[in-house]
Length: 398
Image 1 (tube, rainbow, N blue to C red):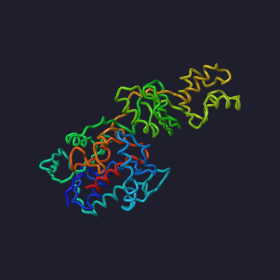
Image 2 (spheres, helix red, strand yellow):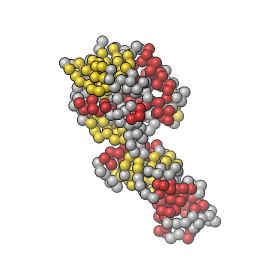
Image 3 (cartoon, helix red, strand yellow):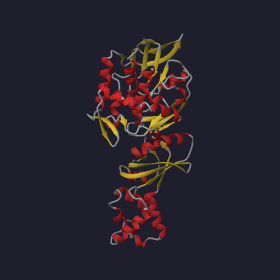
Image 4 (cartoon, helix red, strand yellow):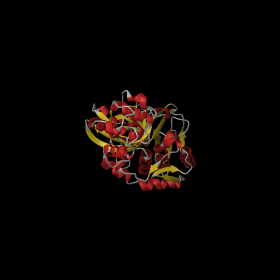
């Protein structure tokens, strides 16, 4: 039996502790007074912990081949979560605990940790990890703990109020790992412009197209939230990882917003036909049931048109500009929001630097899991699923 120390009591840390305890003595070190603090804020407190489409298409990483191998274990991990007592409510492919309470998931995992007599050192901060004569020495605020094996499950820099301070990157770096640039992801995108104040607070279905150095990279559709700083909402979050990486390299980043994603054809053709069907209404009135009134003001202002003019009175150039501002509203992205606002981070330890059991290729018996790794997923339970899968693999592999 080996002595295993797990640093970090989040999703990855708890599941790795549970799995590793099958054949080992396990000590879990957690900086907070309870484990799973970040779990409580996932899914707006409902804990979206999984998705029925766990696949490469929903992740960003520097090593797709290794990620594919990791994701191949998804079914056995989901089965374990079920056996631990997490009964799912599945909505549009998103998995939640049936109670719709994140606290349920945390309690189930913590109860299992207690049932297995896993020692948990709460409110304990790790200050250094060293390896001496083949054994790890973990220096903490409560003294030094030795171990045969160490799993680092400290999370990223995102949501620091939950205790994520990026210390795990320092541990990995000290043992020879290279850290790919760590940046906020699943985060708002910041811009500037006169229209931000005007559209602040508006929610509108839209299709976003991300351009990096004027090259189309990806598209996302959903409810767009317009803020005084830029754009937000799930569709924005899902392109923010790529935007973050591009901005860090000094690339030009732009988002084109289509405010009429319900159309298969052009907004010009739709609006031209609509004006013929309802000839007694001005362009402002014709837009009324399609766009939020604040957004109508922005579109018309940007098009240099008043609400009361009629479509038939516009020049062809004015018609094209108006329609372009509806289905191709361009926003220059200058920055992302902070780690405080980011749900996860992009970047971290390359998957090429861990083996199939999440063991470091730089240091034997050191395991790296969860958000420490250079993998981030879209909204929808993908990041929590990755944390569970990698934590499970580390615990199983020890």
